[in-house]
Image (cartoon, rainbow, N blue to C red; front, side, top):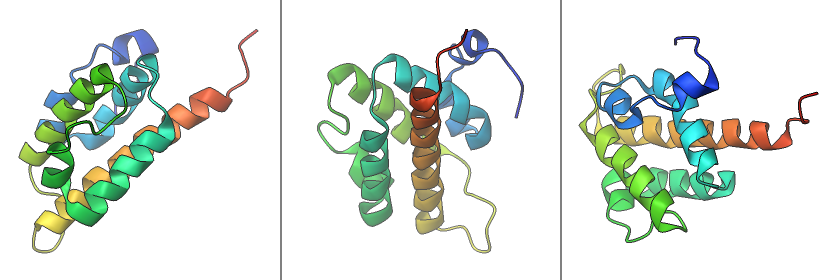
Length: 123
């Protein structure tokens, strides 16, 4: 994971990072991008549960995986990129392992947004 300012991180191509299997590097930029669109953490947590129960392919087929069209465009890019990522390093790569990794990542993005919302104002 690289250290970068919020302004540097928000410009990262999250879909490219996910597609390369660099989920840890994509976490902070994703949280910043989603937060700037007003994405509620519980929306991402709910989507993570859909991924766990039905898989990433099912989540990607949802007409509106998030409440607003701009949020949906953003998350759909991530879902499709994550589906192309190299399998996670587990014994016998499986679709379930990839879905679990994506669901945990979505939970992580939600947790970072939640932490930013609870942070006291600077100054």
